[in-house]
Amino acid sequence: MPTPQRYKYLDALTTAFVVILLVSNLVAQKVCQIGPFEVSGAILLFPITYIFGDVFTEVYGFAASRRAIWLGFFGTALLYVMGSITIALPPAPGWHNQQAFATVFGFIPRILAASLIAFWAGEFANSYTMARLKLLTEGRMLWTRTIGSTVVGQAVDTILVISLTFGGIVPLRGLANMITTGYLLKVGYEVLATPLTYMVIHALKRAEGADAFDRHESFNPFSFTQGSAKE
Image 1: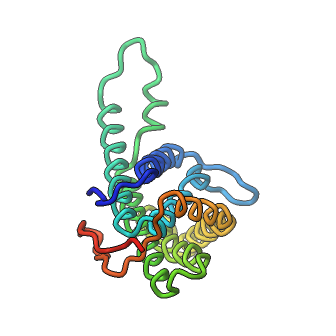
Image 2 (image 1 turned 60 degrees about the vertical axis):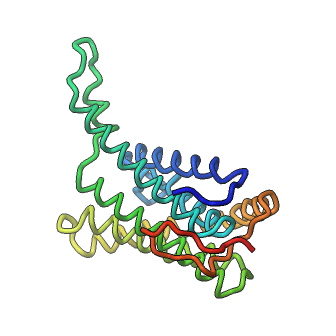
């Protein structure tokens, strides 16, 4: 899934994106109390992946974002698989941390599937919206894209992950509550981060000499051909 043009910072940013995603999955199992809200530990990190999605799409184009999303997807799947295999291996007689290890690295299959599906769909919805809004606004009003793509992408992600994880277990009213709370927190987080997103995007555009417009790009997430994006 290579990108045809070589950039100075794209590989480093993609690596950071995947690392943040993997760490988010590891810390997600802790439930934290923030004010009146009980939230997953991932709330501090996971929304950053959507900021990365905005940066990839705005600076490098949809194809670069698509590549990062697939790398993140397969990296997360590998984390789940290796965690399960390692837990299943018998612990050494003198090692007494099997239960603690299983608590950290053990993933319930339903949660695993829900997380992967929600991540994949939400990230692609975010990048697609970002790219389309850029064409619609002809590259003006960056804030409409960063916020608009977040509103769409986080809606898809939050609805899917909560519904697939807790559907049939939690009553509909409880599901609606969880979806609304999680969604508002994630969107609020990224709206507050808009000035930082602006700074990063403008700095990268100058450094890379790139400002992608996906006029001839295929937005099929399974197609890895790339049209002309750089202007």
